[in-house]
Image (cartoon, rainbow over all chains, first blue to last red; front, side, top):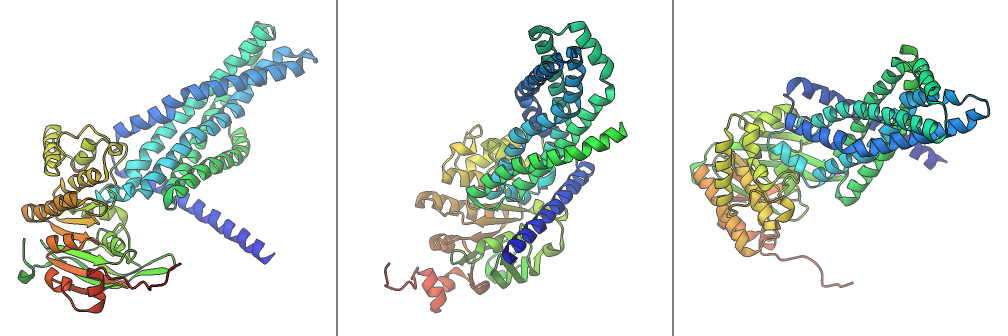
Length: 259
Length: 258
């Protein structure tokens, strides 16, 4: 019992320590943004890696989730004679929840893990020490371009996921399940507002921040050896998933109150 | 190059440096002065803290106690951003090269010059070409670090560390894992860089041939302290049992077998 309590306490302290280190990392990024010029060549590389190369994954995820969600809604609403209500339900769900959350989870898996693995490898092969020895501040050179790349890319990817989800939902409902297209679209326009899209984009922005900070923190704090790289990669995905899902709960209430 | 007799002013001064890694106290009060222009070789047993000591000289690690002076700067009291300014005067060759995987050989070597700024691309290219020729790797700019052998990686890393002509060069086991011919070429390069560019060098090594050939002075690190510092001839021919056993590779393993 005592051992169990000790382990629990150690884990809690570890979590607090990690939270503190992440806050310091964020502060360091902000300081570097103010003090150093932006390295546009590195930023372009990150936008390509985080944004452009994630487009196929996001299109497939957004599209198929929208399609399945529209089909399920139509199956249930048909009995109530409310098939034309599928449109706004799909659109609002995609904008407020499914688009940003699923997009964030995909990017955490594809990009967050890659960031953690790359930085961890750089750490254990002394490349980060080499950067420091060459008078380069690692946060400025390694983290700031990733931060900006993520902050620019993720809201756009969320927008893309929403668009694909709504489009695929329309296609399945109207062309496969024979919901009248005019009613579907009119209801979608009537019940979906700008604020729904903004909520999705704002969530995407903050989820991007979470993925970046968790991935970079795990990479920069990897322990030595190949095992450390593997652990950092796995933990970056699992921790980012958990933090995104918990944060989503609070953002839902907060953003609902704001917008 | 100034001979030890000229007693040039110290460029680096370590005073009572202590460092604990985990539960092990690796450095237990290191005092050492490295004079401007000299080539100081640090020897000692594996895991004895030589690389840790080297990282303290360039402030890649901070001491738990003690002072590390580079010129008039106490590195132990500077933050990472202040250290960036000091590190413009230093270079380090890491044990495994630590080349940046995402950059080609040419980009790796050009890195310090591009970071320095204010140098035209044409000058950078010609400097890179020259540096690679000096380390006997001409026309390798387009290759990637993963395509190079261990010896080639070390030589590229040496070109990268030296291209900005730092005042202080640190070498972490520059000849380990290399064949005698490549080791000899690295030794000669270290001597040339020291003599032609007036660089102060600190070389951590196990290689006694290299220590004899390159060093102006040899310091032996033993049990976390500097056990002796003197000219190579004196250290390598020392009758002190600890120094003698290390220099001549006499182990103290018993005859017992598993």
